[in-house]
Image (cartoon, rainbow, N blue to C red; front, side):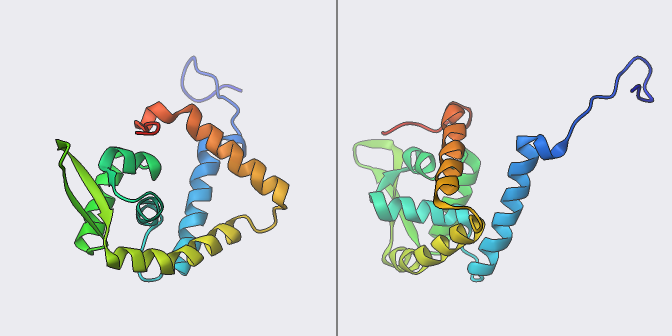
Length: 159
C-alpha cells in the first residue's frame, strides 16, 4: 500500500508485537501499581538502590548503579534524592579518592524493612494470573534481554 509521500511504501507494523511498546506499557502499569503501594513517594528506582545497599552493604556508585540497573543520570538523581532524605550517605573511598562509597543510614534501613513487603506485593500484582512456570520464564527472559544489552547502559559485572 502506497503512502502519501512520493516514492515511499507504508510498512505494516503491529504495535502489539513491538517489544519497546510492550515494555513501555508494562512500565506504565508497574508505576501505577507501585504508586498505590507506596503513597509516601518511594519510587521503584529508589527502592532498587536501597535494596542493593541493604543486601550488599556499602558500594561505590558505579557498582551500585549496575546492581540497581540504572543508567548514569537516573542513578545520580536517585542517589541525590535519597541522600537529601537522609536514607543514604556517601563518602570518598579511602582507597581511591575519585570514587564515592554509598551506604544505607539507619533511617534507610528502616525504610527498606518496611518497603520489602510492599515491593513483593507489587511484584505479585504484576504477575497475577501467571503460574509459577510462566513467572519464572518471564523473569528469565527479561533478565536475558537485559544481560544481552548490558554494555549499552554501562552496567558492569562484579566489581
